[in-house]
Structures are given as C-alpha cells and as structure tokens.
Image 1 (cartoon, protein in one colour):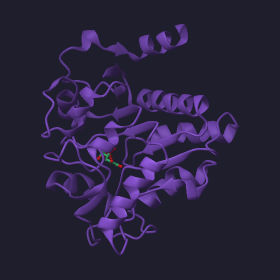
Image 2: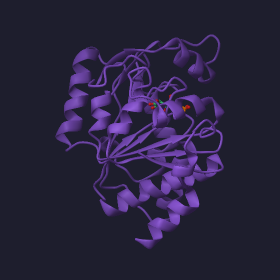
Image 3: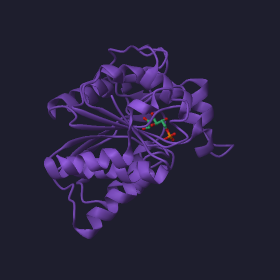
Image 4: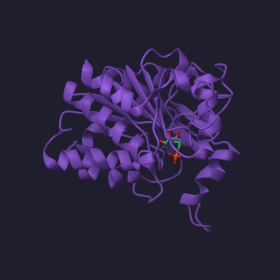
Amino acid sequence: MRIILCDKPEDVASYGARLMSQQIKNKPDSVLGLATGSTPIKMYQHVIEQVKKGDLSLAACRSFNLDEYIGLTPDHSQSYRYFMQQNFFNQVDIAVENTFVPDGFADDIEASCVDYESKIQQSGGIDWQLLGIGVNGHIGFNEPGSSLRSRTRVKTLSSQTIEDNARFFSADEFQPQLAITVGIETIMQARDIVLLATGSAKAAAVKATAEGPVSASCPASILQFHPNVKLIVDAEAGQDLEHKQFYLRIEEETQKLMRY
Ligand code: F6R
C-alpha cells in the first residue's frame, strides 16, 4: 500500500483527479469503479473541468458504482444513481448506458446482485477502483464483519453508517437500512485502487487500514494484500498514523511521477 500524505482535502481531490485522468488517458476504454459520498465530490469536479476543457474524454469508458440503497428509486434524490448523475455523469461525456449502479429497486434483488457481479466480470473486471472509507473502516457498504471473500450482495448497514449518513436525509424522510454493495473480493480484483480519506473522523479507520492487523473488523485493512493501492489522506485523516516517516508526502510523490 502506498500512503500519500497531503496537507489539505483540496490536495487529496486534485491528486485523486490526476490519477483518474492518467488512468483514462493511458486506457481510454477503462472500466472504472466509482464511489459516492462527500469525499470524492471535489475530485469529480476536477475531472469534469478537464472534460469540459477538452483535455479528457470518458466516451469509451464504462463505470460500475460500488453500492446503492435498497428501496430508493433511481430518481430519488438520495439514491446513489441520482448522486452520480448530478455530481458526475451528467457533466462528462460518458454514455449513460455504459454507467452501472446496483439496482436497489429491482423486483428480485438477489438476482440483480448476481447479475451486477457478472456484468463486472464480463466487462473484464475493474481497471481503476475509487474508494472512500467509512468511519468504521467500511469500503463500499462492506461493514465490519463482512466476509473478506464476498461478492456483490445485500448488506445491512451498521448503526454507525446509518447515523453517519443521516445528514443526507431530512428528519421525516425514509432512510434505508439495507444496501447492495459489491463485495470485498470484487474490490480486491480491481487492477488499481485509489482510496481517498479526509477529515479527523476518518483518522482511526485510516490507521487501522494502513497499520493495523488485516481483519474483517476493519474491512479496508484487506487492501494491505493488494499490490496496487494508493491511500491518499489529508493531515486530519492521517493524524494517527505512526510511521509517517516511511510514507511519501504529496510533493515527493508528484516529483517522482515526473522523474519516471
Ligand atoms: C460510497 C461508499 C462508502 C463511502 C464511505 C465514506 O459509495 O462506498 O464506502 O465511500 O461511507 O463516505 P463519505 O465520503 O461521505 O465520508
């Protein structure tokens, strides 16, 4: 795992965007694994700017999102499909039929999970996977205790996650307690993984991910076994890391990329 230390959330966003655009330039028909949540919004904005300037095109890309709430229609303002349309897809040149988000409103949810997993496999697997991390160490909605060999399936959200995400729902609004998520094994099969973490609420999860034992108690810790992971943190999210002297600061990482 390559840990990259930034000062500000803005640096996490711009570096994440740089990695995403580099991936797409190197392989224009990339299969992208995408995340929702507050962390990647700024990163998506940087990518959108590049597309609008004509410096980048996602016309040949396909994308698979990590997760979706069960019980929300795709046009519900809290659904992850809606989030992706608003924050990314509508503003770039990816074809909507090449964007996949699990269907949380399918008649047969179990069958739709199997179908989603096989679509990922049929596409050749994820080339570049973007991840955020939950306060409890979840990736996608693979909550603590998730099988480290799991595939796309239904998960019950932990009370921590429901509490953390309550900020997006109004008091009288239905907040789902179940979600579809791609599995940990599905994520581990991605060829490259970029995990973004910002803010002090993520500090304990970041430490457990990078320096803790590999354990289902912190699902993100499995990433220690992946050969190509970049964990990009701001000063607050990285504040509990003990071995900072071994990790690269963003400036060093950027210079190194320019050297090779
Ligand atoms: C979202 C997802 C989640 C989030 C995580 C962090 O698609 O898979 O794992 O990445 O809950 O969310 P934020 O960025 O809102 O703190």
